[in-house]
Length: 207
Length: 381
Image 1: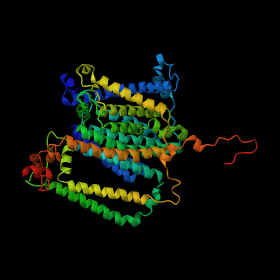
Image 2 (image 1 turned 180 degrees about the vertical axis):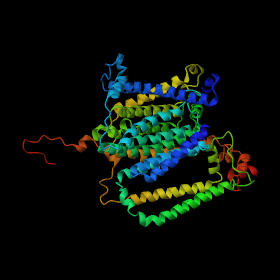
Image 3 (image 1 turned 135 degrees about the horizontal axis):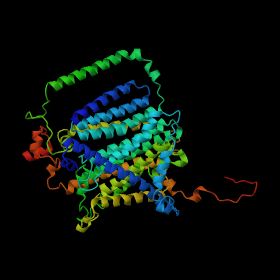
Image 4 (image 1 turned 90 degrees about the horizontal axis):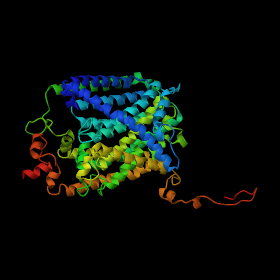
């Protein structure tokens, strides 16, 4: 009973917040609704027994990605009226994307109704093994069967990271002045930085 | 506790619900009391180190100072800036407070005395503590004021930076313990040091990690040397500038609840949680929660000590420490720890080391045994 209740609660909140993401006028509110949507998604994951995926969803998407979203949206002064100006022009593209998404949903539901996908040998569908947490199961599959896929995903992420660093890093002329040399800063002593003088009245100090 | 309620003749659902509510109250109310007292301790320690007396007027030794402050704040008028985003402005402190309380759900106070004994306890803590940043960011933005906004920016960058290295540090501990469950991690520390010390911190490989974790937990809770989010000389009071009355108090409570949580995490992950320091029978006569509280208190003393003695970091130094020092070091230690465990724990069976927890029959049953899979091939031949 309580599972059903929780499912409908999470599902309704998920859909409602997803709708609010695209309808809210303020971009910051949109990002916050997106976070609520992620959160309810994580709740649904817990309900199907995939608590590891749920925790990862919260850590990665809510904890890191959405914070960066929020960061950018808060700093950029996005004018939504300006964004809406091209509505008619972009309408066909929007319809195309909507059709693709619809086709995907239809395919997904169709595939689901056709029955479980049989992976690997012996015609045994993957079932959760009793008495083992799904971290163990995911780990065992990830590091044996999907080892190469896993490592290539890691490699792609590494390339993306290096790419982002290269794109944002630029050599400024005279950048040695702005570069912090921590070692030098720590070694600095008062006598290096200050001059003790006893100037005559009205003479001032020669620097 | 569910069983007790079931003995009273309630059905399982009702018993479970009542037990959960009772458990939440049993954790949250003492926690609030502890926060009030720990604020007093913080001020006293700080004062003693500055050769002052600290709070000494309200109640004996000033013990009731925090309650007097609480009452004062409660009676104040709530001021909402006219240009603020009203809803978000009010939600932000609630988020901070709720998140700080929610993380305590998986903290074990004794063997089995835990509200939610879940498999992914540590991941849950990581997930919840990564939500803490939203309270700060939202309050900074919703206040519609310069200083809170700067503070929010700083807080977001700081928390994300240190979460990365905390994640790697936790991976090291989990590798040693072999589980994400908090009770499991504590049990794994029983007799870890020379068969007698119940702690990970005295392991030569884990000691540097613990030092990093202690410093990162200071940064994660924005405590003293890293309290740039509320650096009063630069940002007035940071994200709390526009807040007054109960919304201000909620920030305050949430912050200290987070500090206590970080102290508890230090105790649980590296100092054996509710286990006594030594694996020696007479020490087990003292109940586990007393050991845990003593350890939390010791760590809190370290936190206030640091607050009283260490000057505040500059922001670029903070970022440098997080990204250029802790991140590479913790990554290095993940490699070192897993290598060491590979050599010591799984030495005798190199092929099962690749999949230690899953035997071949199960792998085959899951359809996960194609020809190339190394740990299966070894056993077939």
